[in-house]
Length: 199
Image 1 (spheres, rainbow, N blue to C red):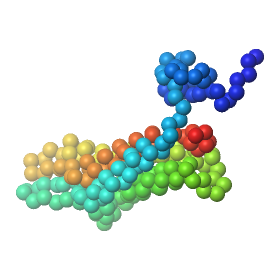
Image 2 (cartoon, helix red, strand yellow):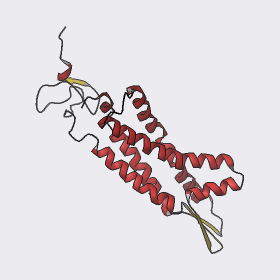
Image 3 (cartoon, rainbow, N blue to C red):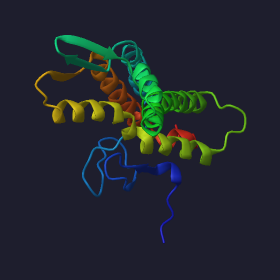
Image 4 (tube, helix red, strand yellow):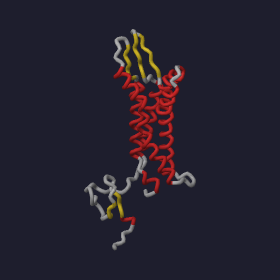
């Protein structure tokens, strides 16, 4: 049995196959993709996506998410305004779902990604690697649930076709979609191998 030094092993970034590093112009034995070791700036892409997501999240909360036009009069509400209105009308479960999906989850994802990006660069005490992996996969799992507000607006706009009522997605819907999209990109661009300190 041939023993190979672990430092000479390199993982394919496409199919995850483990290959022996045979110098420049190396290709994956399984899928043929070009192999390369970690780039110098490993977290810059994640930071760029995350900052973009946080910037887009600001107008998502300041501008109206839903615009309703009825008998010539237009009314609009922000995400938080919609939650308050639903709560005042007794729709507590829906208000809580939208509050958690549109406010709590996005902010939680921002904080988790910031913590992961900072902790791989500057280790904070005796962080447990398992906990970091759990936090990283948590952002992957809860990611799609952030779009529930946009789904509600889209469904309402498609289903309600009354003569005097028009429901239009507000500016916040676009900003919120962009925020969720860039948050997903930030999580996807984060290389979980940084948790192990391989780079």
